[in-house]
Image (cartoon, rainbow, N blue to C red):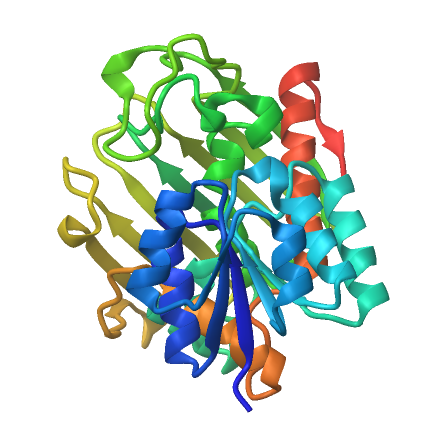
Length: 359
């Protein structure tokens, strides 16, 4: 029997969730969204038989095994908990929630229900990441001592006054929106336990229309813009490993960069995506490299992997289905998500206090 999936949210990420589920052989049985026009259009495109404007009704009337959640950040935790309590596996968009406390509640609900809870950390599903994990597993790189993670944009504010720039709805700005590379760096590092976080946030340009990105939601003139535009931080781990991070929607850099660079005991490496001036995937340049010493010489090796324009989004959704069915190990765990959100909470606390924060 195929796994039956319901989806909450008919936004832009639906194409990747649905595409991954279909590729994995799952059946999409229902779609819920308060925007009935968007829901009907998406249901028609993906041949989804049941459309709802009410999640309660959808859960009561459909026999879905799992639910995919694609909504603004504020609703990740309550909807995930509601679906878990209804006996459904949950695949939720990033970030996991607004803060670590909410993630703890989500984990408790998953444990009580005996259901799988996963998040769309799609960059773990990129071909480059799979290959790098192979090299880490076979000892080529050794232990990663230090890493640098970046997701930086020069003009990338996703609209002004909407939910992205409203802290009560989003939980924060690029720190929480662009957390993928922090997660990927820690994934490569073995997800060590954090010790301290020292960081700062910057709100320059957060209301400047010159720094709006080519995506996001329409501006809301009377809306709120109370999140950061950029952040820099340093994380130490109980293992002795360290991580620096840089994230921004609006910062004076040359071009958008999405990267993890690391230094290990046997080799170093880089996974990177550089975007063109239009900020679109099909203009990006991808790089995957490792750096080693051989016979007294510095050797840089380019790792060839298949192209993946969607940055692993469909593969991530497909892994969720495979994990439910027991044919693949899950690419992420709830406990890892909790660690990540604790680091994000500590970064915001450090930015407020001006002091290092113990995690």
